Image (spheres, rainbow, N blue to C red):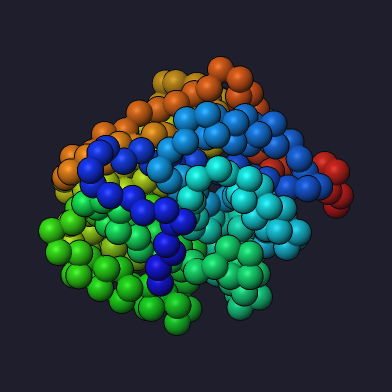
Length: 295
């Protein structure tokens, strides 16, 4: 599956790609719309070649399709081409690992397709191949999981000499690739090893992801893994204890020039870093934020 941006991007100059993630947009739960409006204003002023959203574009898409409709309307306000992959707050989770009791199913997949198109795709831009994947399919036991694996293998086998930037919602792992504990913070262990090996041998140079609402960098098998910060809410106590730093709202800007790449963290001073850590710890999820009934 391929999504073509609305303008031709060549390798004659460095390509500027902005990675934004975890915007959690909603008509009924509009807590984070101000940060999104600021982001759109910055994009209008700076006009990157492409914006890529790595999921959780909506607040609670699996339970409320209007969140997806509203999020699509907001994405269409961007003044430049954009691509997107789904997050668990958009399409649900692998059924055996569904912490939010929102398992991936036919209805949720169809809703995502109606508003945003395919769950996975590739796009050649300049000298690079960009591949987007749906991490909810990994370990899902659905037929689409095998289809996505075959798609990824083919995308890497047919890349020629192009290096690959891979975009997805969940990070491959949080601490180590060998962590056997299943969870909802990263790709499940049963799918992780084969996925990472396919990336290592297939020319993937970098993986950009979101989901954890904090900027962080890791390396595995020669692949740089970059977690993007969110524009919505953060958990300051968690990440200060784990990483020794306070997460802030922002995004990541990538530069692709020839076969080289670089990236930088952008934390706009106008964006508010909403700390929802205590709410998350108390209720187990932010989808129970008011005005939605708490019962």
